[in-house]
Image 1 (cartoon, helix red, strand yellow):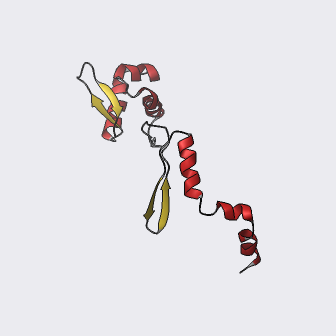
Image 2 (tube, helix red, strand yellow):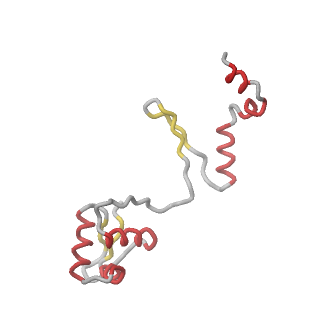
Image 3 (tube, helix red, strand yellow):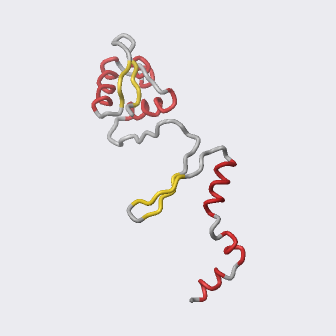
Length: 126
């Protein structure tokens, strides 16, 4: 046994914590009113999944979107939906540009539509 390993094992503070990691994780999650973590093995790795309080959709914004589209996706994270008119006002653009941008986001699978033509809303596609 090398000196470092022997030193760690002789430290009562470290040894007392050994084997209590899962209990401490569960206790901490309970303290915050969150569910216990889940555990699994995946391709030889031990995976622990912590579920936080955030219930929204995490959206990765593709770099190739234009600035107007990125702004709209950020808007959708908070508001959950946007209309074409909202998009026009948000970006100070024409109806034609708004339609082109929104259709592009639909074609990329980022947005989906809801409602009729007159009352169409754009939502994050899940």
